[in-house]
Amino acid sequence: MKLHITCPNCGKAAFGTHKRQLSELVTEVYYECRNPHCFARFVFTGEVARWLQLPVKLNPQLNVPLSPAINVRGLQDALQHLHVADLPPSGEAFEVARGQLDIFHDGVAAHGP
Image 1 (tube, rainbow, N blue to C red):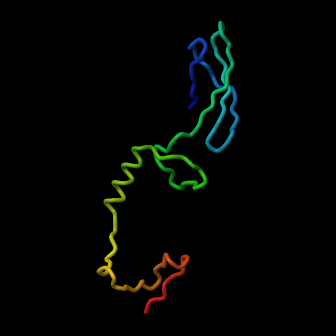
Image 2 (cartoon, rainbow, N blue to C red; image 1 turned 180 degrees about the vertical axis):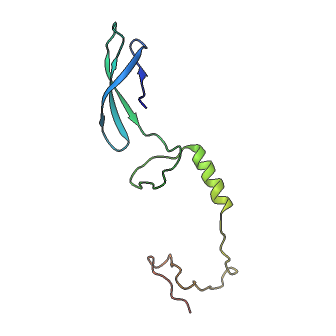
Image 3 (cartoon, one colour; image 1 turned 90 degrees about the vertical axis):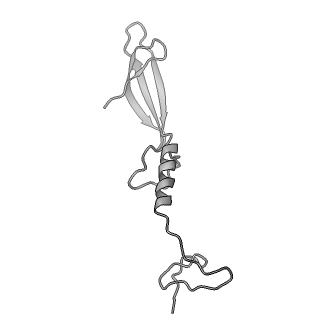
């Protein structure tokens, strides 16, 4: 699919001639107006602004915000599938299950009884 935009000068169709990738999120596209009374040339800069749907495998190095719709849906889904831990009454000690990661000891698995 080719996307065409309108010329900012005359409002007629402009077509991309080539592009230049500035980063993972920013691309420049070079356009030419097809109006024979204009023939303007200009550069359009496009940037990935937000995720409308998260990728199956998200690249953690990209700093792309979520669409507000994803935030709401994600929070609703997380709340529906929330698992709550059974904790002892305040002040009582409890044992960490065998093989469970102990968050207070740098990812070392606990060695229960």
